[in-house]
Every structure is written in C-alpha cells, then in structure tokens.
Amino acid sequence: MPPVLEQKKITVKFNTEDLESPITMESESFITEPPSDTKLLEIKQGISLIVFEVVTLPEGTVPEAQFPTYPIEWFTSTLGDPFNTPVAQPDAFQVHWYNPRQCTLVDTNTALFENRHPFNVVVAYANKTYGSDPVIVNLPPDG
Image (cartoon, rainbow, N blue to C red; front, top):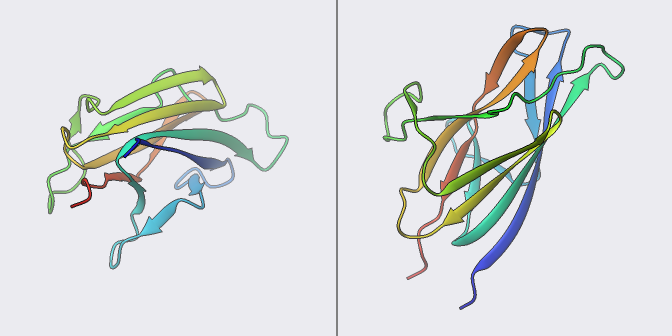
C-alpha cells in the first residue's frame, strides 16, 4: 500500500484583547476526546503536512502576533501525566518556520515512533510569548 499523504491546516487566532487566554485554534481536522477538551489531530500512517497560520484579532491591530523562530514546544507524552515537562522535538517531526505568520510541521508517522505528541504552538506578541496545547496522535499501523 502506498504511503498516505495528507495536509491539515490550523488557523491560530491571537486575540490582543484577551491576553490572559489569547490563543484559539480552528481546524476541520481537530477532534475532541471526551471527557478532555484537548484538541487532537489524528494522523494516519504516512506523511502529513500540518500548516499553521497565525492571525491577529481584532483585524488591523499593530503590532501583529507572529510565530517566533521556534514555534513548537514539545512535552512528555506519558498517559496520565500532565503535559508539562518539555522534551526535545520527537524524531517523527520536522518544523519549518517560513515567515512570522506561517510555519509547517511535517509528521512522518511510522510504527517506529511513539504515537502521542503533546505540544504548544508558541506565538509572540509585544515582546512576550504565549502557548496553546493541541496533541498529535499518530495512529498505529492497520492490522
């Protein structure tokens, strides 16, 4: 069977009027795993390109929010543990920062790597950084 090639787009909205919790993310690809409200991306075996685009709200706000050079912060993935211990980028991923408003994440999902990958998308605004917490779930091979 040929490898699966997928593309997913995530819009990262940064609300400058709510700096206590400024980030919301929207994507048709998110699922929510009850009872948690953690946003999950299920990735099939193969290669997926996940495109992140940051937009600043309200429109026309200056300065605009942007991705820092390293826009993803990875965390431990042990089930039952809180996702609060930073770890090095998992081998299954490559992060590409293209410009301050867009970055991509290439996910190579094989049976060689662990399947849960919690991370923060990091956004910079007015000399501070902010993070939000989706989880990538690389699905195991069929059968």
